[in-house]
Image (cartoon, rainbow, N blue to C red; front, side, top):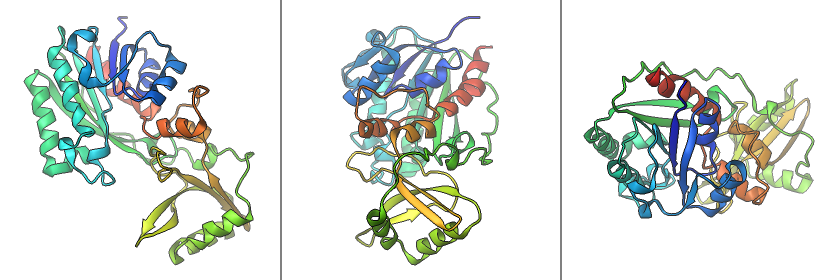
Length: 328
C-alpha cells in the first residue's frame, strides 16, 4: 500500500501530525512561526521536517511534493474573543499565504485540509468562507466541509470545522459526524492524586459564584456520586467570576497566554468538593495526546500549545472518513 505524505502548515506542536501518523500518513514538511510550539514539535517529532519561520517568507519551491496539505490557521480574527475581524485581520488572514503557496507549488497536493473554529463559516456574512472556497476551486479542487466536536472522543466540548479540497480525486461520501454520546467523562482523565486548592482559594472561588452557579455547586456537593466539571473565569459587568459547567466535561481548551484562558476543574459529591487549575497532563488527555511530551518547555507553555492545537482522535476520524477513502 502506498504511504501518503503530507505538508503541515501552522503545525503548532504537531497534533495534526500525531493523528495522521496513527493512520499511516507521514509528514514530510512542517512549518510554524511560534518558538514554543516549535520546541514541542521538535521534542516529539525531531527536526528533520520542521521549518521555523513566518509563512509569508515561504515559497512553493520550499515545499516538497506531497499528497495532502493541512492548514490549522489562526482563529483569532474568526472568534468572538477576536472581535470577528475575519480574514481582513492580521492573524487569520494568513490563510491566504497558504493558498498562495498551493498555487506556487510545482505539483499541487491532491487533498487539502483547512481547520478552524465554526465562526469561519459565518464571519462577515460568510463572505470570507466563500472567498477561501473560491480560491480552492480556482485550483481545481472540489470543496466540502464538515464539523466535528471533540466531545465525541474526549471529555472536551470543542467544535471545529474542516474544509476539504479534492483535486483529481473522487470525494468520498462524508458520513455524519459522530454524535456526542458522553463516552468519556472529565473524571476519567482528572489526576486525583495531585494537590488541590486550600481553604483560602476555595473560599475565593465560592465567593465569586453567582446565585445560579452557587446553587449548581451546592447540588453537585450533595449528590451521592463524585463527579468532575470544567470551570473557567468570565468577566461579567466588569467583574471576574467563576462559572462551572452543567455537564461532566471540560469547555474548549484555549491558549493560556495572559492566564485568562486557563481552565480549572471542580470535583464534588458525597458532601465534599474540591477545585484547582487543570495541569498540562490533563490538557494533553483532553486533546487525546497522552503520548506527547513537553520536557522542553514549562508546563504553562505546554498548556498554551495544547490549547491552540487540534484534538488527535478527531484527526484520526477525519483521516478514516475523509482522506484515506479518496485514495482507495
